[in-house]
Length: 542
Image (cartoon, rainbow, N blue to C red; front, side, top):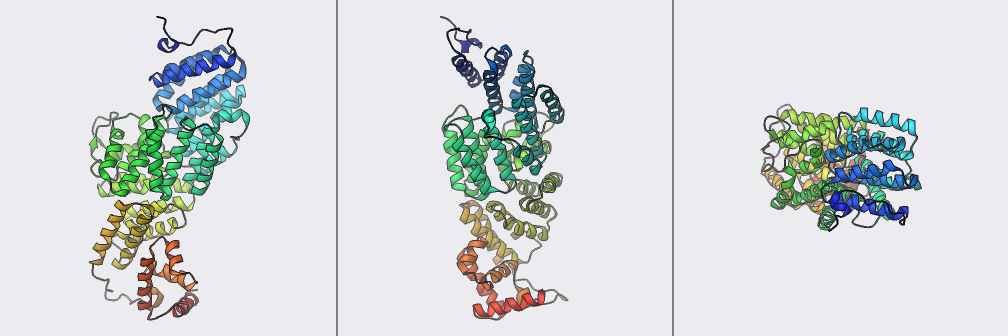
């Protein structure tokens, strides 16, 4: 019985009767079989060997290089880098070599590899000598990945904006370009732009079940988690994983697992979330560990999972939290698409008494906020600093900033952080807890809603704040809590209670209760009197 090309790991001999298209199809099919069989390095090496023959012209070469990039994207970083380095040992032409070097640099930059800058320089030099269009695109993707690893979203946006994903020569790299652009939109808090870009990219790319559609699906699931479309995110992630597609890469799989676990925790389904996250806690060396960081950012909210585990790169046990922080110091990329991850890590570190880890994450979030000065990241920097320093003013600032974004889960978490602040008056803390509970209910997070409701009960049992000796008694509008003041301002401006509830992400009942408290504190009885009181306050304070 003769051996097949797959079992031998070699490509079929050239058949002169076959045209270049048929040969190319056989080559790619064989490479895919090798990858599925767990032999991706061999697949990459054999594709490079065919590229080195350069027997069918530039079009054939470009298509094979595109498949090399796709296989590298589907594999773990260590495997991809090893396979690409073996491919570079082939005697490929200068243009192909420059593209392979650029792909290596891009893979390294995504993980925050310490050699990223050197690899990008080497790829840049090779591109300058060859002038290959394919290497130019991968070099740009590598530079954008480096910016993302450092939290420089505007820098990544500028690099990606110069690429034309719709140009015919770029069609093989179009998905990678669009995916990175969508990630930038998510990181900048432009969630509607991310949604539109995902829909457009899905329309322009291949059929479901391909690496293309899986990557875009994972990004869309992350967007849903960020804005609070939790049931939809979980359903789409489960469906994608259960499809059994062999072209779901390791990174996409890790992101989908993170989405499913995040939603289950927010629903209060802790056992189901732990079952999903179990494989994520396996020992992995960097850089492969980096792709699982989003899933670990979900796991840290569960004290049962935050136990000492063995890090194979160290000689002593390292906590789950410290493993995450170590990887984030190489690349903050995992924090960018889901706003609540950064504050969650600080919250977990503070709860564990690990001030060093809390400070390191806070500094990373503040670094991103410095390099990406948008409302979302300024608010997240305030929130992490408020958690670290137990500063209610910083937490108030975070809540105010997050109100200007579509990141409802992050806003609800910040409200609950504010409600849990020991330095806050019980009345204001109660307002924050009620608002957090209402927002959790709105996004479909009954598990988190139960936590907020429990805090409401605790605060209700606390005696009302009494001014200490020498503290002036607040009167008029100044006597209102921040939440009551927001309601008073909207109602005085003409909004209905239903409109105010929708704008403030609280229930109608909450607004109604707050309005009764406003009337009592101001000594008034109707909306007209509220308008007059608010106008007087604005005139005196202005």
